[in-house]
Image: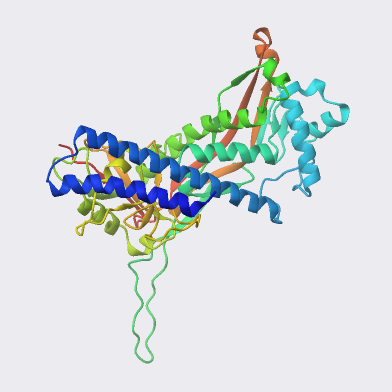
Amino acid sequence: MDIKAKRAEQMRLVNEMRAIDDKATTEKRKLTAEEETKWNALDADQENIGKEIMRFQKVAEFDKQMNATQEPKLGDINASGDRESNKEEQDQVARVFNKYIRLGLPNLEPAEQQLMNRRFITDDKGKVTIRAAQTVTTTGGGYLIPQGFSNKLEDAIKAFGGMLQAAEVFSTDTGNPFLWPTDNDTTVVGELLGINTTAALAAVTFGQVLFGAYKYSSKTVLVPIELLQDSFFDLNTFLAKKLGQRIGRIINQHFTTGTGTGQPGGVVTGATSGKVGLTGQTTSVIYDDLVDLVHAVDPGYRTDPSAQFMMADSSLKVIKKIKDTTGRPLWLPFDGAVLSPDVKNPPTIMGYPYTINQDMAVMAANAKSILFGAFSTYKIRRVMEMSMLRLAERYADVGQVGFLVFARYDGQLVDAGTHPIQYYANSAT
C-alpha cells in the first residue's frame, strides 16, 4: 500500500469538506440538505481511507513484533504451568486446543488429553483449579486459552470499545484485592532556610485505590456440529471475534460509566466537571468550550503522552465542523500538514489525539459528552488468564456445542485530588 498516496487522497476529501463548510460560513448560513449529504459522504470516504491505513499499519506492526525476539510475557503459561519456553511448544498447545474445541476431549489422543489435563491442578476436595488463573471449574471441560487464541480474543475486545486502548492496563496472576497507592503533595512547597535554622516538617499523606476482580462471561456461543467438523471453517477466528466482542461490550460500558458499586468505576463517573455549555448548547459544543475544557486540566497532565479527548462518534461529527478564531479547523485527519506514513500520527483535535468510545453519552441536555485528560490515570486491572468452557452434552439434542469464556477485570480512575480527567457537559436547556 502507498500510504503517502492514501494520505493525499484523504486530505483531498477533507479539503472538499472544508470548502463546503467555508462557503456556508461565508454566506452566514447552515448547510443545505444537499451540502449536508455531500459532506457526510466525503466524511465517510475519508474515514474509510483512514481505517484502511490503520489496518495496514497494524498488520505491519504485528508482523514486526512476531519476527522480533521477545521475552516471555506475564501469563504465557504452558501445559505444565510454566512460562512458555519455545514456539514449538506453543504451536503444539494451540494445535491440540483447536482440535479440542472442534472434537471435544474424548476424541483427543491419550497424549493430547494429557497435554490438556496438565493445565489443571486438583485440590484435596476434588475441585479442579486452572493453573495461575485462580478460577475454579468442574469437569465441564474448561481450559486455559493458549496464547495465540488469547491474542485474537484480546484484539477483538480492544477493537470494540476504546477504553482498553486509551487507559493503562496492568495484569496480575491472582484476583486478590490490589491496592494502588496515591498521594497529593501539590500544595506543599519547599522553604528558604537561614543559617542554623531547623527545616520544617511536612509529611506526605498517602491514599489508596482498591482494585477488585469482577468476573465477566461472554454468555454461551452456540456452534453447529457441522461447522465444528468443517476444517475449512476458521473456528478460532469466529470464536475469538464473537467471545471477544461480547466481553468487550460489557467491560467497555463499565469502564466508561460504571458506578463503582458491584462493578468497575467508570472514567466518566470518576471525572470532574471541566466545562458546562452555555444555554442553548444541548446538542453542540463551541471552540471556546473545548479550550476551557483543555485548560481545566493541569498542565502536568496536558503534557502527558496519554493526554487526549474521548467522545462518541456523533460528538466527533459536531467537532469536525468547528474552526478556531483564525478559521483553522480543530479536527485534522492527521497531526500536522505533512503527509506521513508514521503509525504514531493519528487524527487530532486541537493537536491532541482522540479515542472514539460509543459508550460515551451522545450530546443531549446535561450529557457528559466529551472527556479530556491524561488517560494513563485510568487503570484497568486484568486477572490472567481467561478460561473457556466447551459445553457439548448440554446442547447435543439440537446438534450444537456451546462455548463460554470467563474473564476478570476491574477499572478505576486513580485521582489523588488533582483531577487528571475532566468532562464537558452540555447545557441543561
